[in-house]
Image (tube, rainbow over all chains, first blue to last red; front, side):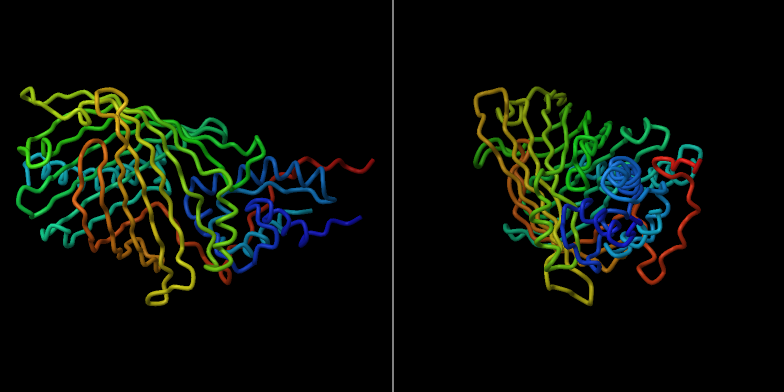
Length: 87
Length: 315
């Protein structure tokens, strides 16, 4: 079964915020606007979430750098970024 | 204003400038301001008819070199708070505080962004101030040091409230934070003073603080944030061990700039000192935050460097 990137990317963001059905246009800037938050988010994405993706989906996760999170403003931006890191 | 209060205020401003120069001019160290870094200057009327002002700084820096893997990071905090009032027999107080700590993450235990970090810290606080020894008593100067040990963490389960509010405000706020610190008090006034028990005692300080975006309210097309801080102090030695409480609320117009206008209300007692009830107009200067390019200007993705876990080659 192929990796459905859009679906998995949404699931990632929903798990991050524990918010099933989170709207794409909700601003999440407060979670990425300092280096401390970006380091933390990068660690979560490359760590436990990458493991979850491997174990529960058909996708694989390409590691992300904290600098890539700097332009993120909304939940939709983060979904799009996550989609680019799924293979 | 007492000379020491003025000295503390000037010292506070100097420390802000110095710390920013320090952070920018020593690139080898790569000190980064943390999200909590903020300077505020506020002034306005008080309940007693006087004119009050407050200068407050919370500066936190974390050097990259202090990180152990991605799980632990050290930080240095410099905090200052100076109050001044024009009222007769006003109680002017100031404090300077140096904080050393580490923060770590709990995601390995099943936490996600709802409860990401715990901080542990040592806090040394030098406090100068004036206090009234009992109702109608004489105003005396205080000079003493508090040494504290504490922990700070985000309120578990707060994501439920944040999820609900984000649907109204279209903004996902950070979870509220609880800090618990125990201070040991050492009086080093020049002359022995008959200080009240509450001031002489060791104490436990519990604080809850955070920020909420006010739903459906915009001023000048900018969202309005409610910053809240509730403090509860309980002496752990001495005769009087009653809880004291302190409240500070600020409505901040956040247009995305580093400097934001704010309306600040504060009242109550903290650390054995009573603060005048006041409503101040102020400016908040938040730094260490990047603007973000926005959805339309999202940067191109960086070159992928690794797949987690590595995909096996066919054959």
